[in-house]
Image (tube, rainbow, N blue to C red; front, top):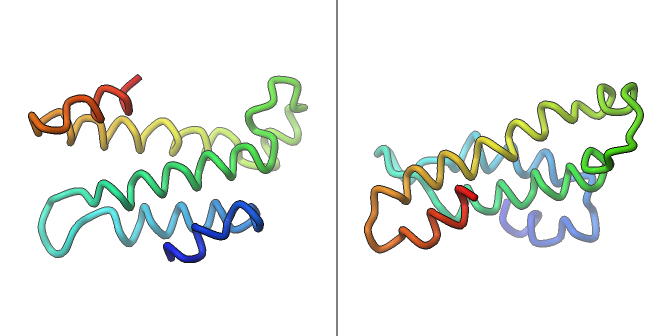
Length: 104
């Protein structure tokens, strides 16, 4: 999945699927409850790429295209991922700076 993510800039149509795969299958490390920070950050970058690729970041995007591209759903993930990761990292004193960056 990471290899596909690394090539997503030249094939941005795969970004949403890769972002979702990372979120759904690689969110947790092992069998525990520890969040896989690197997978989460990569998932976020893929969601952001998918938002840009279909134009969900363009204020002038017509409402029908906003709905067609499921922009609300894409943005929901782009907001949720850094919030969850930031809250997780805030519990780690060594990661407070990264946490603050994600929660901005």
